[in-house]
Length: 291
Image: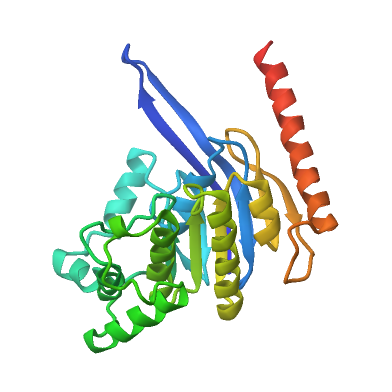
C-alpha cells in the first residue's frame, strides 16, 4: 500500500535582482494506492506529476507531508525552520560514517523507477547493465548471471546480451530499462513517461509487453504520462492533476475487464471525460490570465 498524506513541494529561487521567489509544484496531495494496482498520474505539462513521482521514490523530500509504503515512511520532510533543523540534528546525532556504511546500497523500500530517457549506462552491454543493478541491490554474485539472462529474455532481449545501448533501437533500450527494474523484483514500479521517446507503433507494443509483465507479477505500477489513450488503456485508475500547483483534480476508475480493446466504447467514454476536464481547466486558465 502506498499512502501519501498532504504532500506539498515548494521550490525556492532567487531572482536576478536578488529578490526571493518560489513556486509550489505540488499542493496537499493525499492518496492511497492499494497493492497490485496499475495507476496513472495524468495532467497538463508542469503540473507537478513527475515531482510527485520522485517524492514517492524517495528521490526528493517533500516540503510538507509524508509518504508511507507498507507502513514505513519514505522520507521525512526537510526542516523548514531553525527549530526544526535543531530537532533534526538531535534526532540523528548518533549516526556515524560507520553506521551509514551499514545501510549503503540497501534500499529502504522495494521500489524500482523507470525514466523517459532510458537511464542505461552506454559503456555497458545489456547484460552488464542488469548485472550492475543486481550488484547494487546486494544479490549474491552467483545468482546474478541467471537472473540477468532471465529478465532480458522476458522483455525480448534474449539475443542481445552482448550489445551496447548504442546498438539497440529506442524501443529495445526501453526494454533494457524495464529488464533492469524487474530484475531486482520490486513490489512497486514507478514510471515517468517511459514510452514518450518512441514511435506510436513501438509505444503500443511496449504497452502490451508492460501489461503482460505486470499481470504476471501482481506488482504495483504508478505511471506518469501525458498520453490520454495510454492512461485509459493501461490503468485501473487515473488520477488527474490540476494545473500548477498540482493537486488531485479527479480520481477516475477504469472498470473495463482485461484484456482490453483499444477501441472499446467504454474506454472512449473515459477518455472523453478526461478530455472535457482538460478543456474546462484550459478555458478557465485562459480567463484567469486575461484578468
